[in-house]
Image 1: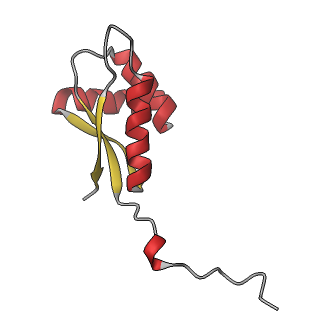
Image 2 (image 1 turned 135 degrees about the vertical axis):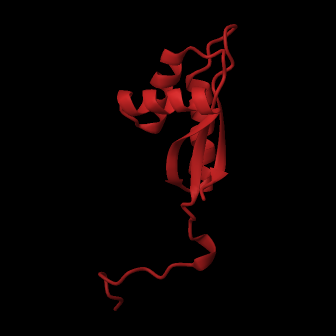
Image 3 (image 1 turned 180 degrees about the vertical axis):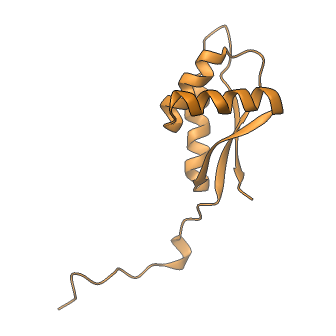
Length: 102
């Protein structure tokens, strides 16, 4: 009888690498308040942290919005962030990329 408390064997071919980040890119179209709300909703950030990231992206050209993600999760957050900040006929949503974290 198998031990019910034994750790399951992990298949090394399906291990998830969590060395990815979501980079928010500066744009001069999406309103700041929309960017901040999108970061809060999609990335789970507080208003203060979301505002700091938005300001950094505005001033520096880009800023890390989330770190320690799998590639799939980082790409999914980018899609959701763009969709959440899109305003039809006004702005296409924020630019963001999923990148390997250094």
